[in-house]
Length: 252
Image (cartoon, rainbow, N blue to C red):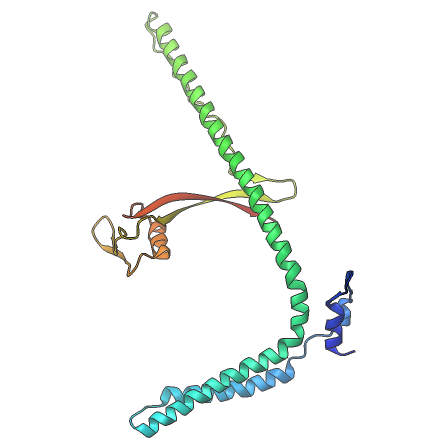
């Protein structure tokens, strides 16, 4: 059976009423034979190397040499076209297989990623609520500790003794990493980010506390500004610098 026929058997067969997927055992597909195409590419690579060396060493001093340089440029362009066509012609039959699986792959990954992000946001919101609850509990504990300390002082004063110090009590903090029974876990990745709110006010030069120039911008660049923030800058005119928290899923 020809390889192309095997590919057709793997493809999804569509009819007017139904869609049927024909299953083919993996053992029925033979490995790609790249020997012939690799031999051709090796010849093209040698030709390209020769032209590259010629181009690097070539010097233009006359009109004739200028014309010869154009010829070298044209030959290099032709080599590029030939290599591209050779590779595309070789890979064309295999596209039928990759296209048949890339569609489901994309749909499944997009659906899974979207749902995972939704779940992670719920986990993140629950974590934030737990942190708020912990802060409230800590406030109540601190107040109770303070009241108890004052009460002990009042009782100790008439007796002429020093009141014992009430040890500080800490409310239990929410776990930084939430683990599931399956071995998966979700944690929060924190980092500082920069958002441009007024590009007219963004300076073209950022300096450290000693006045030394650290970054120079030709235009307000979000990547360079984020790099400066990553290195510790916390105030830039025309920008909002904030701490960003992102839930991250980890599996075994």
